[in-house]
Image (cartoon, rainbow, N blue to C red; front, top):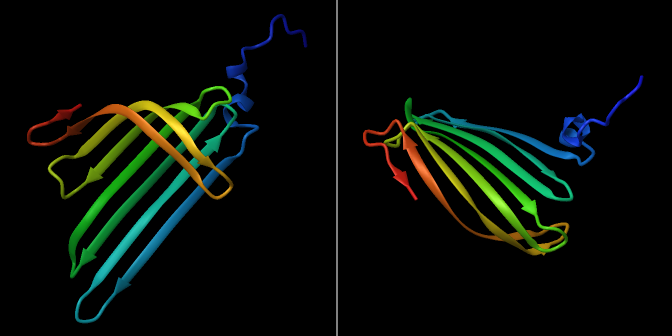
Length: 151
């Protein structure tokens, strides 16, 4: 096979999926009791993380549902997605954060919050990863009686 020009690096699957490993986790929790009072609690979620030389990606999804005496008392979900762009060999980074919140008992169907700014890596060891972030953002509530945007 003759290649006239090399393909751009972003076309290669290794650019998106490798060689840096992905950290993937799933969780499922079920708790309940029956007697004079009945309760059932369900929690499901997962996370997806990846760190390369220049990027750090962290995403998590959690869903909670609780019933007590056949009445639903909690039903919500939270999706957090953060992307950090490391700046050269320094402790500084730029970040983007997206949060999506669903809560059946709130006055909205969905709240979306977008934030961005700068971050500084205070501690980076095998057991501790402490980053301070400073930035600005905005949020919007969809499906509310009065839809609001906050900055």
